[in-house]
Image: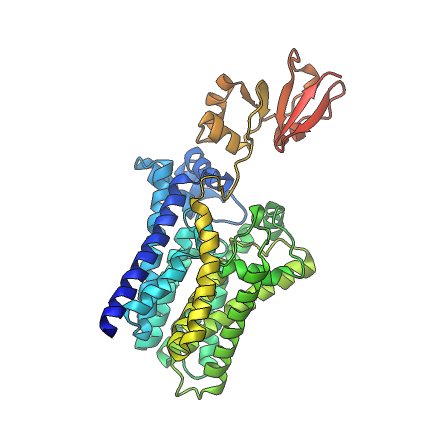
Length: 477
């Protein structure tokens, strides 16, 4: 009877994981492309391989991702095909999470339960299917994490050395990957302090840390920090209460608003607070109270990853809050989200058999909060990132090359040269140089995008009023 019940629950969990993956696929197909994704398309189509190799296009991200996208476009893949490729990356990350929990010899049932929380995380759904570098970076992170735990479990240095190479790829994809580097080597350092790091891994760990510091110094020398700060002007400076809200979002219990503002609600705050308390208590019991020789080094390492992730999040929060800097950015914090999610899943899997009633209650509360946010993606009127420039005014419209969302959605342009070719027939005229508005034909009103309006000198004989969010309407008084 018990075996039959276990079989049924395993099938239910498998169906739950399948539904979570289906929601990701639905989002990948039906969510409209938003500005950053369109930027990926434009960069890949507008610049040659030589240009992408020569200099950075963005102060905060290397060009490796755009090189990969350009290669895929060269192979004939479509924009939707790119979305589906990113969904495939999320499927790969799901398999890596399944493999990760095998280090503790968890059975198939428990590992499927872990995948429920991975595939239904509102945070991962928000950012994993986008045509941006985050999905691929999460796969690199999980490969590196698996190899690091493999090295500790087997007392072999080769997996750790391979993970260093993967980390180099990760830092070549997205700047936020440096947070994982900080978390990883902090966790290994703490493990060494507790005399649980195998001696064979000390030298590879030192090599990895030294190489990472060298690459970080090189990266900072190529891109001045002032340029990165200016580029991230739109990231909100956090308020004192945003630390708990950000943690709630990173645990997948709430969605950030547009521009990543924190809008978590009270129940999610409470559950995430309980989750953090659970991590802290477990870490204290296993790391502090248990003698080093008796503690499982893999469990200690995972909890050190969690605590290091919390320290990184707290450091970025305090730096942003005190110095008014745009560092507390929900997308760049994906390494913190992954480490906290994996640690919380592990602790819940351990708590459930020991305290079935409490464990089930926490599992249901967490899943309920995740599902409420995740299921919003299958609602017909839900848009994660509402499109700009909608509706487009009827009449003569002037835009600039920076208005890529308008060019992509209305003119079907996929590169900067195509804006000049495909937009004018639709009465959308690109302007790259300042023009005197007084000299423009005004038999009918003209419309300017925000960037076009700020490109012009102040008109002397025109009255311009903002309409909607993204346009100005200009007339002779």
